[in-house]
Length: 217
Image 1 (tube, rainbow, N blue to C red):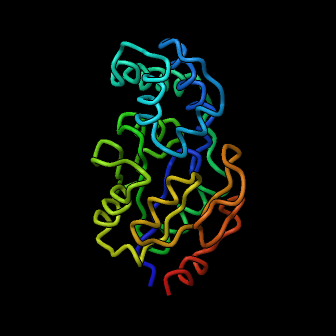
Image 2: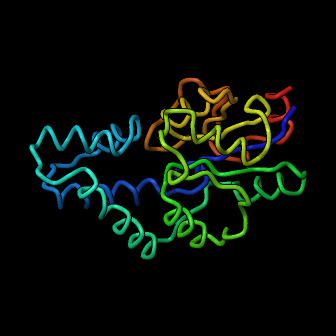
């Protein structure tokens, strides 16, 4: 029985991946790390902290991982202020359908809470999410299950009664490790399909509440 729905944010509800790519490239350039899109894909398959640690050793960078990554938040927030953030097609209507049906939903995003707040404000969703699990709330990032487990606790429902929406391999792995059914949403950064998903969709116009109930029946 469906008790809750949990969404990743970047690339899943909002089209922010190009902004992250540019902000990460700027951050690494300042640390004198040659950057290409394959590094970005490595980050999405692992974590930015782990990949930065690997690059620090590879390029013999004296600065600490924290010192390399500290500017990233500022770089990203600046770009959010300069960019028009697009919602994924059908996302607005799908969230409203959940609210109308009384199905609780939450965010489960690895981003810092400050970044999440800025993104939600940019698209007029400041009051849309009553429950948010962010990277500030957990010890182990995706693909560990921690953030989805935390989001399920916020919703007060068991993982087996939740459906997660994800666009990235490590996010899918996180939600599956937490015991959830996963619907993958296509994002140009990763292509199709995402291993481990119960279903792939191109947009939220391709899924209904009945579909979610069927997954948790």
